[in-house]
Image (cartoon, rainbow, N blue to C red; front, side, top):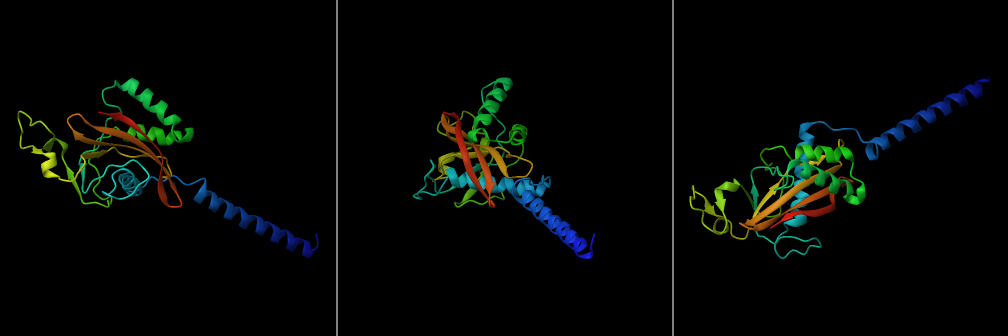
Amino acid sequence: MTKPGIIWSFLIVAVVAVIAVCVVGVWNRVGGRQAITDPRAVAAAEDEVYEVVVRHVYVPENKNASAPHVAATQLVFSSTLDTYLCPGVDKKTCLEGVLRRLRGAADGNIRPETIDNFIQQSQAAGTLSTAFRTDLPRTFVAPDSLYFGIVPIEKNSQKPFYESFRGASGIISFSHVGFDSTLHEAIVSTSIVCGDLCGSGRRYVLRKKWGKWKVVDAWVVWTS
């Protein structure tokens, strides 16, 4: 091979190598994202999801919103995580129903690993993070420290909710968030209790696009 031919061969190989590196880099950033296992990153993503869902549902009073929302002037959160996938149903039937609904949600495009992680994480007890931001003043309370409506026979130092938190719509609870391995897809349960026979629970699917979480599907899980 002549010297110019060798030079051209090296140039072609170099160009192909550069293109390959660029393609791999873009793939990692856009499509084939790397798995994230850092607990701090997971906690930060969980807070971001909570913030988006709170703004989606529990928006400030008189603020226009296209999504169904609960008007309030302050927010009250349960300090303990919601661990009930579907209250009042035996575990086997519950799991079958949850899996069936999740597999059909978001146009049937939820990743199996996201669903599996949600099933696991949503049943894990713990304390709700207080690091996520809200547009309204908020308080974190132990649910059994308050009561609604009828005064309990034994108060045990419980206080009436609406006298303690005027302008609040009820006690809001969240489950742990289930994520895919890249922290770009999430499922979370949230509920609000507004009285002895007043409340509802919803489930949300979110995806992160261009650095921002967006709600892509939501449905009512229970109501009373």
